Image (cartoon, rainbow, N blue to C red; front, side, top):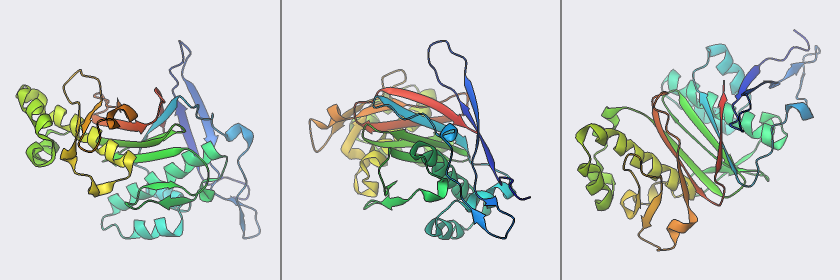
Length: 282
């Protein structure tokens, strides 16, 4: 119908500010508006649609589902750039293709709100190891997913990385710690009661992956060349790197795991921000 937006996203904004109630925002994401003459226009978002700015001491972490009805996936595909659509088409299985489309479209929606752009106007560049970054001024960001769960992290404080894994004991068994972790990490892991080792493995894995993603090193950085904390109850931290005794002072690691939701996750930041603001995107 002319004048009717084709897609509406509901953002559930859960801000832990004092004892204030959770805020719920309903935000229209206009993919395209039919003018009735066979062409489409892409209106800029109004001031009311723009999100709060990211303060210098903040890290915004959004949790989202990648499961959407097929009709929604086709609409979200319209937000992607040509290279993203081509990459989506290379996925062999429909489920993986749909999750990729939804994940990238949701990233564009969130970045568009921070930048004051419609999602299609967001432009990306890629580092030597394919880490995406904005081609214009804006926050640092990173995204990750495991199964249907996706996490998006944004900050103005420095380079950021995030990683999530579904809490699955079989995952830990398939990735043998002795093949990937440092000797110190393996010693700590094997010293734990057996019932705690699967979760500790995933804790170590996600912290390492978040650190590598923040650095943008891809597969070039060996997982056993640095240590992270993994003991249950211990603060998340980068403990050692093989290349510098000063490196650990530059990094902040935050555990983002949610046992109730069934996943283990972590974030790494090379900056001074410490206030993590968690939000849900539905």
